[in-house]
Image (cartoon, rainbow, N blue to C red):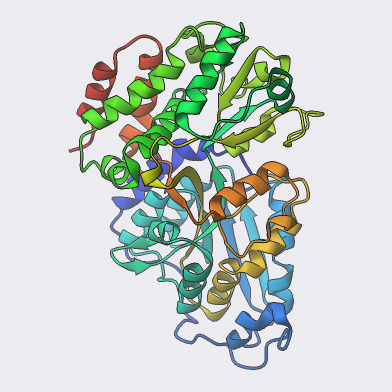
Length: 458
């Protein structure tokens, strides 16, 4: 899985630009109108091909796929398409680009869209739908999503009551990283409630170790780490319904509930007794890169670091990431059991610009449990997970991926997409980042929330 930060910067910009194009659909659907190409599918009779038989013989057809996932991560995606190609006879033409969002906009304007794109932001999907580019998902895809994903996931691919984009991969942000050995040596237990976690923080601080370490520096995106902190706490203090109202600006950014949540974050990150282990005091958080923020755990200089599943890639070679390893993670505990098990995260959505039979067949495959398990088996190095409930966790090779999948598949889990990625780019990739940086550097909660609220586009 690629680190999502560059996509966070550009996706909001692309979404805003495409929303203003007002162009009609440009995808090539000259062969559309029939759900089947006719003939007998090459994989007819094979269990793994059952869902694809109705599309007929697609030999000689090609489906073009455009994504932000590049080498070496793209190899696992390409390998996962083999079952589809064997079942249907069609070929998948894969193209990955680090300039994905900007180039997708260019291709939309030029009438040269791919058949399918993997889009990592619900707001961008919505903008493309409103611009008239996206084809509604076929019934087979909708049925798969109903069977294998939660309603919250389907909602992110739905616009004005119509379903367009099925979820693909996912990541979990509601994690706290720690050293299992350090915890065992000191008799510290992994907390299961927020109060337990704060009591543990006090115990660790009393031992002479700073319980928390953090870093938010990330170039032009400095501050995004704190937006995740606030989003996670919002879900735990006020629940998913109020979280949605906040993200959609149905309540103001400086609402008292938001202020209370940010003060809760401050109760951890602005406490000199708690931070910043192995690095410095509170103000060092702003100048420490997010990549380095948790590394003092390896030296026993801090005990906990809240960061997403993709942080597994930052620990370095030779570091064992497992429950019995050098580092691992636990679920960030909730504060209110009435809200179930809130999970903050991100993911990609399969968005189609053509409805030819081979394209609909590929959409169907990607939304199935068959593909999810093929993708897991094709990713031996780990770093990928899906919220697909048909995914056999045993097929995942990384312990942190297995933990992520178990959290996503938990029937009590309530998933919410990263809030800043859904807000207007001027806020979500602008003032929200910069004002959180100002906040950790000393500005008050009220000052920064008022500033963000005043920046919200009219």
